[in-house]
Length: 151
Image (tube, rainbow, N blue to C red; front, side, top):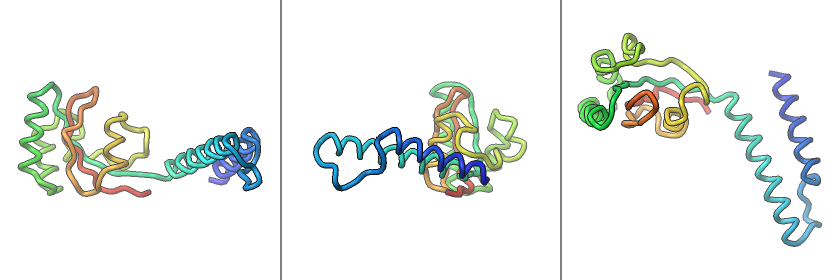
């Protein structure tokens, strides 16, 4: 943990130096506005990266492989399940084509980047305790239940 913090502080110092130091009110004009915007963008990126190191989520899913028929089946299941986690787990055990079906679709806890991009987008941005989808990925279509998330 200490080494990660040291790395981030070093990164911020190098980034500030590369873009001409910290923003000051003495610099005026378009060029300084652009520099300030760049610097603030760097700080936003550092903050986002730092936050993602500690972000965790737990989710369950139902995967059905195929095209439009898979999406339609998941729409029907979603209407039937609502946001009920017990009904979701039962449906996952019955219909999901993923090995996680044996555990009610539970994927456990994971961080950003552990799943495919489309899946991550939902899990780390949408409402917790709600069934989302169908979401299309390279594996097929998913219903996703976000069980928990720490920011």
